[in-house]
Length: 291
Image 1 (tube, rainbow, N blue to C red):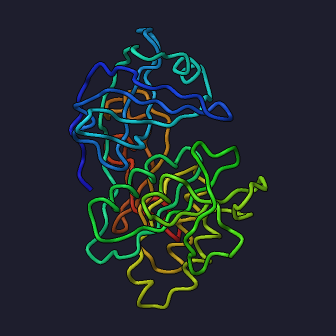
Image 2: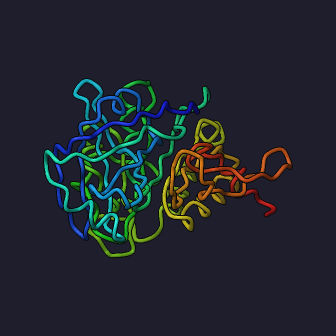
C-alpha cells in the first residue's frame, strides 16, 4: 500500500450535482491530484473561501488523469459540507491531495470482495473500476445505504451464485463495466437485500469451496459498526481484509494527531494516524479478535 505524494492546488469546480437526501456529486479540475490518486486515497478540501473554516476530508470516487479531474461524493452533515453545497461551476476550492495509502490486492487474490456502506461507497467504486481496467480479476461488489443510493440503480442482468434470486438491484456504472454488484438496505428499496452488507457477503462466501475461498480478499469502507462486522466476518473465515477508516481530521497531514486509532501488530500496540498512516489498515490490526 503505497502512500501518495501530496500536492496543493486550486481546484476548479466543473460539475456540482444535487442528489437525493442532501447528497452531492462534485467534479473538480485538479490535474496534479488526478495524475496520482489511487483507490483509497482522499483529499482535504476547503468548503468555501473563508480562511477560518477547516478543510474537510473526502474520499475520491473517480478520476480521469488525462482530463485532469477527480470526483467526490458527499452528504451534508454539518456547517462545512453545507457551505460546500453552495459551490458553483467555475468556483475555486483549495485542495490537498492525494493523501494516504491505497487498497492493494495481494498476489494470490483472484476474487476481490469489495464492501462499501454509506459514505464508504466512493473508494469502493474507484477500486472496482481500477481492478476491471488494469487487472484480469473481476471483483464482487456489495454496497449498502439507509438513504436513497446516490447513483443510478438498475436490475442486474447478471446472476451471481450465492445471492438470493430476488436481490437484483445493481449500480448502473458497474453493470455497464460488467462488474457484478448488489445493494443492501433496511429501507425496503426495490431489488435490495433486506439486511446488512456483511450478511449478504457471508451468503456469497458460503457458496465457495475452500480453494475458491483461499482466493478471496475483502476490502471495505464504511461506518464503524459495519467495519467491525466485516472484520469479524473476515476473521471467522480466515480471509485477509483491508479496512478504510473514517475519522474526523483537522490537518490531514499528520501534524495534529487528532485522528489517531489504536493498532496492534505482532502483539505490540501503538497509536497510528488515520490520515498519513492510513486510512487503510488490516482488519486484524484494528480489530484483533482478543481485544
